[in-house]
Image (cartoon, rainbow, N blue to C red; front, side):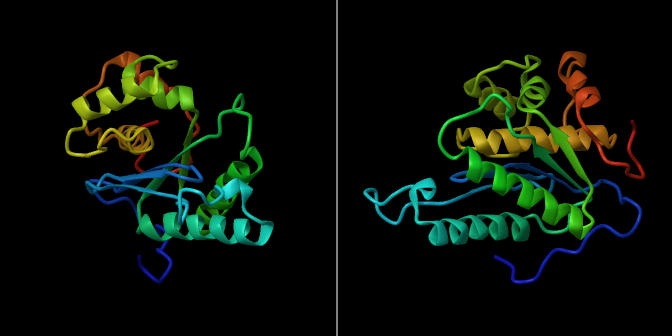
Length: 201
């Protein structure tokens, strides 16, 4: 892990642009770069019998979440565009409070550093990957493996989601990594994109 913060984009886009996709998660944040790498990082219990991150005492919990935040932020390097998955509004249950903290802290850090950030909902990410917004995790993994074989996900749905987000960002910038049908690319028109020189829409 690097020890210095990445530098924000200050000049016009070079070709091809570097895009990073991030699927935030407490236990398995997926990160994918258009430079060809994929990573998954998150909280891991020291022992199987130890409590999960949402059951830790508050001091330990915030320290663990800050570690995840730092790991993700320092892993991305200096991309031209970051694409994050928005939280699922319908998702409930344990950890919602902690997941919300991680998402907003990550977005805030990226925004403060000057990184352009695009946002896709889970349905938009699934639509781009499969052509169906309600596609199951397995379908997304299969389609990402088939259409973007250079990015190895090892069957991890968080990694596959990150690749889909990254690929959507490259597509939006006019540098697609694969030719996808119009049904898939409809997700790009629905997503939230920053104002960025070089974008096609």
